[in-house]
Every structure is written in C-alpha cells, then in structure tokens.
Length: 242
Image (cartoon, rainbow, N blue to C red; front, side, top):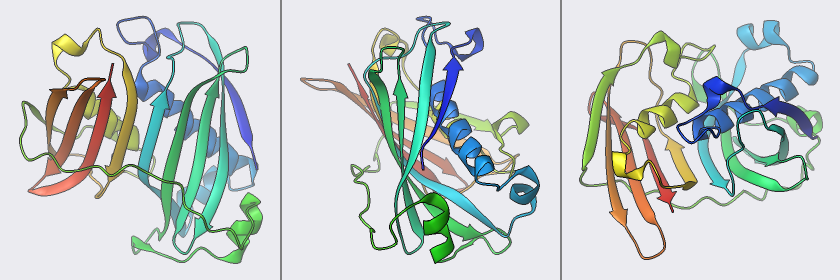
C-alpha cells in the first residue's frame, strides 16, 4: 500500500535559508502516514477511541536537498515489514522532476492504548497494510550512542504546542528541541542526516533538558544529543552536518 500527497512549502515551514526545515519535512511524514490510516477506514473517531496505537521508536532521515519556499513536493509512505510487535515503514520526498530529495526509515511498535504495553501484531494488520505475512525483514538503523558530555544545553517545560492528539509530546517536538541546541556557527551548515531513538514519552509540564555535543570530522561534523527528564533518558539522537 502506497499513499502519496502533494505539499507546497509554506513560509511558516522555513528556516533562515528560505528552505523547509527538517522538522517541517518530518511533519509531512506524520501527516501522510495519518492520511494512509484514514484511507484504510481507520478514521478520527476510531483513532481517538481506539484500543491500540502505533508508537514511533526510531527515525533515520537522509536529506539530499531541502525544498524551497513555494516548491511543490510529493511525499509518499510505504509499509515495509512487520515482525512480532514491530512495524517498519519507508518515506520518500520527490521534487517535480521525480528526484528523491529526502528518504527516511522508521520503526514503530503496536501498543495497547489503555495499558501502554506492546501487543503482538495480528494477521489482520498484514492484510490491512498489504504486507506478506511471511516477510519479517527489519529495516536497518545506525546505532546512536549516548553522549557522555555536552557543550550545548537547554532546559524548558513541555508546552501545549509540543503535544500530539494523544496528549504526549509529538515525535517532531523532540527534533525541534534538539535544534535549539545547535550552535550559531552551524547556521551555514547543511544537516544531511538525522537519526533519533525514542525511549520514553513526555507530557505537558515535564521539565526537559537537552544536552548536545558537536565535533568536527574530516568529512562532516557530528552532533550527539540526549533528552532527559527527571533523570531519565527520553531520547537519543545523532546528526550529520556538512
């Protein structure tokens, strides 16, 4: 099953170079996967009262080029495979010439909404998403190591604007928090890859600390990021900058 949607880059989605921000691209991903869910007949009324939910565990986003202001792009998502509790999904963004300018892998887990515990993916989900029930190959993700020190740190409180429809911090909010720690000398750099792991949820009023460290390498600069609340690690991430 493939779902595609055309998006026109708006002013409020831009960063300082008049190109779409990394968080805007990931907002497109979240939107198109929700559209697919609705197209399958799992509408808003079911999602808001459902017994199960897909919880995002990982993103690995590679950017060849950021779309420009007012540029039309096609965003598509394809369910890739499922295995026990986990599901893997691909995303791509195409320009008007059909070139892939962004691609991403993601990993999800099926949970019981009320108990907040994983549940095994049943045969009906394979049929619903058009996935071979004998195909269980996972997508690969680079390992994200926890940074032991930090050169940039910010602390704040989770706001209403950070929350999703489930009342938890949206997965893209974590990315926006990380971007707040990027030093000013990186403004002219190009973020070409973002890998992020989600370990725990956060809610409105939680005090969040984001710790980042940046190191220059021969081919690119690397950022290591850690999001903490009440002494617990909520998320780890790694960024590559040209």
